[in-house]
Image 1 (cartoon, one colour):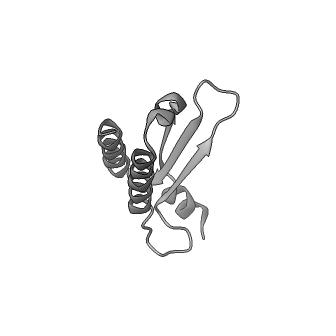
Image 2 (tube, rainbow, N blue to C red; image 1 turned 120 degrees about the horizontal axis):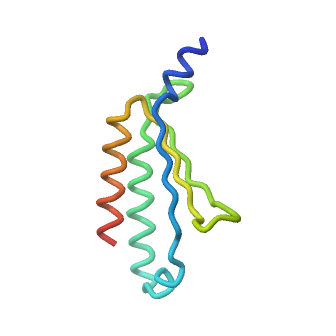
Length: 98
């Protein structure tokens, strides 16, 4: 694959850093925790539906951060900034519903 294609595939990126509120998580019932887990998995699975190519144009990563005030890092790579904007808005809407 020519370098220009790789650059084009990864030319739009978004990173978001969060702090997971463990105290709030522990205050949820087991049922509430499962609901949050299921909704989060559904959201990420929707985002990860790729093109079926060797290097899909839709890629994301959920990482744990050590030694930083925040402890969760989300990285998204998309073809366009419009796609990233839609993703960011969808995440903001889903987080506000918890």
